[in-house]
Amino acid sequence: MADTGGQSRTVTGDPQLDTTVQQWLTWDRNPRTRAQVDSLVAAGRLDELRSRFCSRLSFGTAGLRAPMGAGFNRINDLTVIQSTQGLYAYLCRCFADFNRRGVVIGFDTRGQEESGCSSIRLAKLTAAVMLSRDVPVHLFSSVVPTPYVPFAVRKLGAAAGVMITASHNPKEDNGYKVYWCNGAQISSPHDKEVLRCIEEHLEPWSASCWDQDLVDGSSLRTDPLIHINSCYMDELASLCFHRSLNSSCPLKFVHSSFHGVGHSFVQEAFQVFGFAPPIPVPEQKDPDPNFSSVRCPNPEEGESVLELSLLLAERENARVVLATDPDADRLAVAERGDRRGWKVFTGNELAALLGWWMLFNWKENHPDPADTQRVYMLATSVSSKILQALARAEGFHFEETLPGFKWIGNRIHDLSKTGNQVIFAFEESIGFLCGSMVPEKDGVSAAVVVAEMAAYLQNQNLSLNQQLHNIYTT
Image (tube, rainbow, N blue to C red; front, top):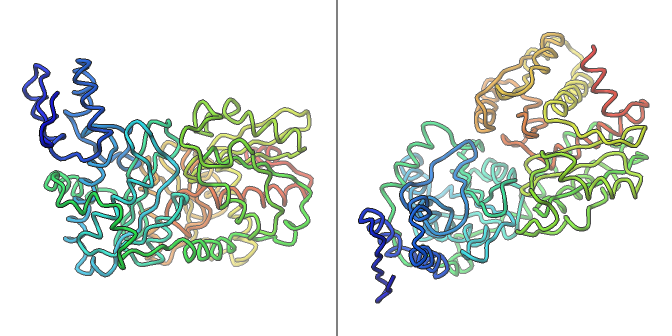
C-alpha cells in the first residue's frame, strides 16, 4: 500500500474491500491505526480486513462495544468521532436548548498502545466534536465509575452523557455508552435514530474534531468531578441506616477494584457510612489497562479471578471480600465460612440479600403498611424470581424488564413520574442498584450497602450466607 499526500491505494484483489479501506484511509488521522491497515494489507489478511471494514458498529445492551483498532467495526478515533457527530445531530433534533444543556463525558482506565486508542483520548475526541459545534461539555478530568455519568446527566440537567468504557470486557475492547437526559441508557427508538444519524455524518466535519487541545482551551468545557463526587456521596448517605453500628463493626472487608476506577470511590463510600476503610488488594488497586494480575477482568468469574482477594482476606482475617469490576458498575461478593471455605455469591443470591435488606430498612422507616403500595423492585426477565415471591408476601410491586439495565433505568424513570419508588433493582450478572439515586447499576453503592448489611447481620450473630438461607426457607 503506497501513501502519497495522504491518499492511499490498496490492492487486495477485492474491489469492494479496496473501496472501503480507501475511504477509511481518506478520513483517518491516527498514524497508528493507519499503520495497522498497511500491515494487514501487506500480510494479505483479507478475512481480517473484511471483519474490520465491511460492517459497522451497532448499539447493543451496553452501547457500542468492540475491540480497539483500525476499522469501521472497531472502537477507534474515527468511529468515535463519527458516533459523536451522529449523536450531536440527533440531539439537535430532540432538544431546542441543546447548546445550553450540553453533554457529560466520562472515561475509564483502558488503553491500547498498538492503536493509540485510550479511553481518555476517545473521551477528549468526543468532547472536541461537541465543542467544535459550541456545545457545552462537562468532561471529567480523571477516571470515574460508569454510574457517575448518568448521575451527572441528571444532576446537571444535561441533554445526554457518554461514557468511554468496556466495563469488564477483555483488555482489547473499549466502548461508547450513551445516556439520555433522564440518566438511563438510550433505548429504542433513540438508539436506532442515533445510528441513522451516524450514517448521515460519517465524514469528520473539520480538523477541530481531531483536536484534543481544543478541550483544554475551551471556555465551554467544565470539569464536574469535585461537584458530582460531593453530590453523589451526599446522596449515598441516604442508603446508610446503621451508622453507629458501622463505626464499631468488628468485621474486616477486603476490596479489589480489578485494576479499574473503583478504589478511591469505594474508600470514600466506606467513610460516608462510618466504616474503617476496606483493605485494598495492592496488586489491583491502581489503574492498569493491561489488567496484569487477572486472566479476565470480570469478577463474575468467581474464585478463579478473586484469588488475590481471597488470599489477602485470609492473611488479614477478613470475612467479606468485595470486588468491583473495572468501571465499578458491578459487584462480586465472597464470604468466608466457619470452616474457612469461601462462598462466592451469585448475582441472584446477592439480589435476594440486597432486596431483603432494602425492604427491611424501608419498612423500619415507613411503618404504615399502606406505604408499601408505592414500593417497587425490578429485575431483568432472565434473573431470579425470588423478589417476586418476596413481593407477594410483603405487598410491594415487582416487575420484570427485558435483559439489559437500560430497560430498568427507563422503567425507574417512568415509575418515579407517577410517585412510585424503586428501592432495589438488579440483573443476574452481578448488576445491582440500591435505591434509585442513579438509573444504572452501581458497584460503589452496592459495595458499601453489602458491608452495612454484613455488619448488621454480624451483630445478630448471622453471616450473609446464613441470612440467605433464612430468606430462601421463609
